[in-house]
Length: 140
Image (cartoon, rainbow, N blue to C red; front, side, top):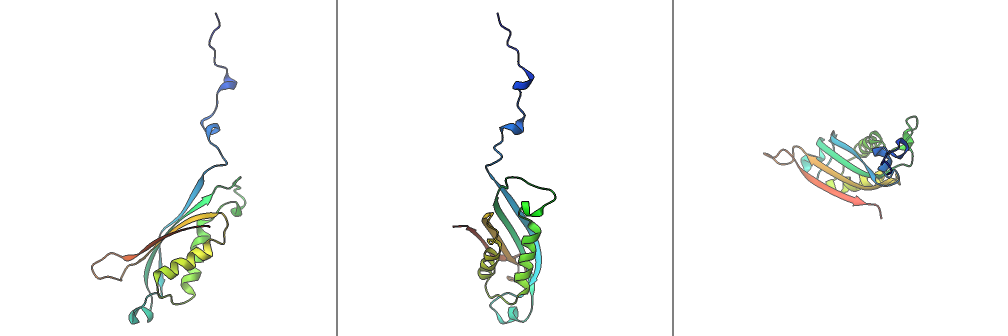
């Protein structure tokens, strides 16, 4: 009669069961507040207004993440800097156009597969906490 003995070498770690070459990371930027010169109405063209920005980017996992090289990941801080630069570049009439500018700039990073952008004007409608758009785009 043979004993059913489990050998130590036969044990696998839970992480051994994970395919490290599959899947995506979600990079997000929540409730990013900026003053923006945006809008179609005369009073919106004369100054800035508060804008709340939320972004989620679906990013293909890197093969190897390196703590000493930020280029090994898609950095949410870089996304925030791109958005600030676009906002500071001048007046935009439509939120949809602003979203497209953000997509265009962020999709320069080839690892970003899909992005969802939510833009909210906080002072657009009296009695409403916010009004705005949410747009999602994917790389072709």
